[in-house]
Each structure stands twice: as structure tokens, then as C-alpha cells.
Image (tube, rainbow, N blue to C red; front, side):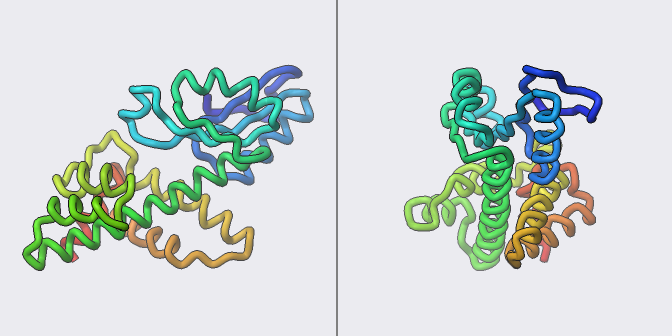
Length: 215
């Protein structure tokens, strides 16, 4: 469950598991607060689609001690098929945040390719189907590209543009703390913000394709 507690909560023997995507610095701070009370923390953010959640085939990236991971893994496998111990506390968040950073940039590349193809007389569905047979294939292409960008399906109650920008901010924070300049991520942050400013903040984040094609 997503942790929501203050310094006043948490007790000896308690285990808190955060399945959400959260700031790594905040995650490690919460873990330290719990440790001071004799409680344990594991960050276990989830990945994949809403359908995967319904089918119990999520991917979960865990940051915890090996001992705690061993006790949690059977429970997590009730709703996930891929469960990875990424390292100590915060490592699950680092891995998930970077997963999303790569996803957002990939979706943007697909959106740009579709816009250029359409304006040059190539059917977007044919384009992405053809790309899926070559080196440009990806999970993002087969899901976000073919199921959202091509049909223009950007529902309001999905992974929103505002939520994507929130997750991206964690990647930018990580890079800044590490002294690494990630220009591609900075650019997709600007693109997501432009879509939000244009009124698509609540829409499924591949909606950036609609704004790119308006270009």
C-alpha cells in the first residue's frame, strides 16, 4: 500500500510497502523514520498497464533487504509475474522512475514518427506495425503507439499527462543529485508541460501525440 504516515506513526515490527512511484529522497527519509521505531520499509513500485493489473501480470521493482524481500515476494506474486529485487531501500523507486523516463521519451518518438508519416502519406497503423517487425519494436510501440496514438484514444482515467510529469520530475531530481544532465528527459518534460497547458493534463499521457501533430 502507498505509505502515508508522519513521524508519529509506525511501530516496532510493522512493515510498510509502498507500491506507488515516489521521490527517492522522500522514500529513504520515510524508511529512516520507520527504522528509528523498529519498523521496516520496502519500496515496490509497479509497472505495466491497467490490463496487467487486472490480470495479475504486473512487474514490480523492489527496494529492500534480501531478508525482507524473501518474505514479501510470495505476496507480491499474487498480482505480479515479474518481481525484481533491485537493491536496498530506494532502489525500486530508482528503477521504476528510470523505466518511466525511458517510456515517456519512447512515446514521444513514436508520436513524432506518426505525425511525420501521416503528413507524408503513410498510414500510421501501417507504420507502427512495420516498425514492430524491426529494431524499433518496443512495448511502448505495441501498447501506447498502436492502442493510443494511432486511434487517438486518450481517456481521462488512465495514466495522465500530469502524473507522467510528476514521475519525470523524480528522474530529473535523481539526475540533478547525481550531477548528470539528461537533456532528453528535460525536453520531454517541456513537451508534457505544453500538453498540460493546452488542456490535456488529465488525459492519458500519449495525448502529446495530438499536440505534436497540430504542430
